[in-house]
Amino acid sequence: GECDKRLEQTIDWWRTWSTKVNIHGGLRASVVRSAITLKAMTYAPTGAIIAAPTTSLPEAPGGERNWDYRFTWIRDSVFTVRSLAQVGCTAEADGFRRFVERSAAGSAEDLQILYRLDGSRRTHEIVLETLEGYRGAAPVRVGNAAADQTQLDVYGELLEFAWRWHERGHSPDDDYWDFLVELVDVAASRWRDPDRGIWEVRGKPQHFVHSKVMCWTTFDRGILFARATGRNAPVDRWKKERDEIRKAIESDGYDSDRGIFLRAFGSREVDAALLLLPRVGFIDYDDERMMRTTDAVRADLEEDGLIARYRTHDGLTGVEGTFLACTFFLATCLARQGRVEAAREVFQRAAGTANDLGLFAEEHHVKTNEMAGNFPQAL
Image 1: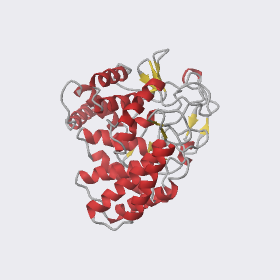
Image 2 (image 1 turned 180 degrees about the vertical axis):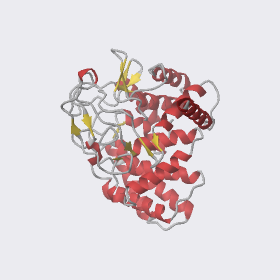
Image 3 (image 1 turned 60 degrees about the vertical axis):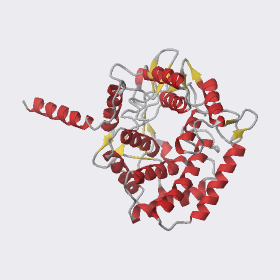
Image 4 (image 1 turned 135 degrees about the horizontal axis):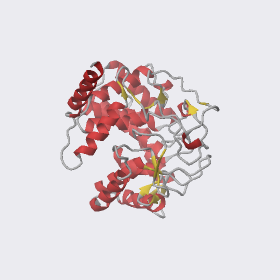
């Protein structure tokens, strides 16, 4: 009947789409599975991409660390479209690029870090007292107050994304160029401020090293863009800002005794976001400082082969699980540093946490061998 016909059409559509995935070898099945999942988390009418299709699946047993992920985070979405583009699926990147420009209404100053799928800004966080959460975990939340946070890495993510898009042969039109210039200028006015960082800490804002590096990236890609396209831009001013940020990071965000980068200015700790520093070219993967930082992250944050985001108390009760994306970040670092066997082990340990359908949660509790956090997680 009609249902069978619709089902056949759906299966045919996905089979056709998945032929775009341009990767071969032993991992093809896993990569196709992930690509299909990411594609399914895109909202075609607007180009938005959700972080996860669930809310309030707890990161720690019993609750408090329960968040609503049914929104589009700029950072997470950039990771998603980059991954899809790397395996040959590029249309989603253009849809998301237009979504950001439209949602920000062309104003970089008013850019939020997350939006609803229709591009609107209403993300007010409320607690539904009457609902019992997963295994009784409370509270159950709708909305996400992180939308109001300052997270300075989003400017660098958008400039890096636009630059990669340009390298694939898509030069920005005048309106998009104006938007990019404004993003760089906003970063120039804000990079000296503390922020909540990639991990959206609900405690006190800090001068997170990863956020500073992404501000460095904002200027670096802006300069590359201006040179490559011959467009007008205050390149000398941007160069000065870029050099100042590097100086600040290499003095205040670096422990010269141990020879490693630190989580934040004034901290003695590392966090897993440091594994992303070479991704944007701030430092080479095989630079000795990065090799040591990678080892320090592993020594401090590894639990049964998986990596936690950070160790510091963050103002919330309960202990979250290891963060799967961070474990894959570590595998990338090790592989790019020539430590291929170690990289393979880490990758396989993380890949082994998938469920029987090849889907990954945000986190994994090693003591109970259970998934934690929202699911499936795009990041």
